[in-house]
Figure (cartoon, rainbow, N blue to C red):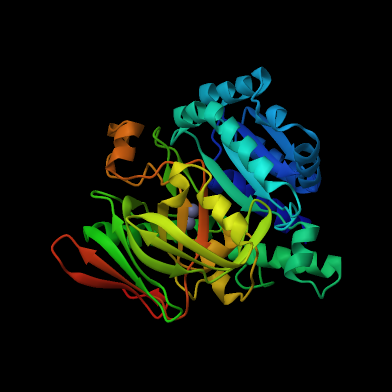
Length: 414
Ligand code: ZN
Ligand code: ZN
């Protein structure tokens, strides 16, 4: 991919993604295979005014080695040095830029049970730090082409060709180019327009006073999900409690809300494979009763799916309902990315696990406990899974009993 294009993309992530302002601290989390792009993005953060940019490198192979050789007890420990890092984040609220380039299946074969147990134990220590930072810092998840990921998406191409194709797909879906592999455009301008359009859709939905959503599709999906009173639909651009804007997901095509914990009835079928903890779960269904996932089946990796909903008490409850037109640009590309950041934007989806505490009117006036009591689910997990199909219909039931079609044949009905 052309360096000038990549530099513009790095600038887009710094200026629109985490929206760096003068004096900000930024932490870039990236996989070890991306030195060149990370250099670009760090430079762009400084150009936008950052006072300090740190990079935290990750490497899937090392994660596997860690889980293999460390004892469960050792793996479960959060040491003083790690706690100091978390405290630093609480004190300084650095903007977080997560760059994804990993192999979506790169942790296959790892001892997932041991890893999950250790993550559960560590979460007990980390949770108060996370809660102290919630809704206070800017963050963005975006993608960079990685070799193993490209080969998974384009198995019949040479590595270099596959990489170029993946870059084309990333840059198109993130609005840096006008079409797949096409002309480069002003990404910042394109995002301003996109953010305005998504905001308008949310405003309409928020005017309806929706109490529940009904999902129907010919694959068997037949599900009713209750919504939180005074809940808000959000999309694309978000704001911190301090009033700073950021775009948490790039790309993004979804308008989402947090469902009410304890109110979901029926069954839903997945429409795309799910990459969870570095492994693929595929061909699955989830049946809900009183809001809880009470029965799951999967053609591939059913045990991992079951483990997923048993991570903690909240992992079996819903935390997100997202509406994405079946004919979104990502869906139109016809590609499966095996990566939630993209695949969730090709399809209506639900998430099992934590809800978003900022999807309630005047959320800043409530404590976290009050927000959870209103029905925003709490969990260490938040896993999106795709349910959108070409014939999916979604109907909103409003407080005054009206039935308003939101989705018809997989696309917006308004
Ligand atoms: Zn989502
Ligand atoms: Zn989600």
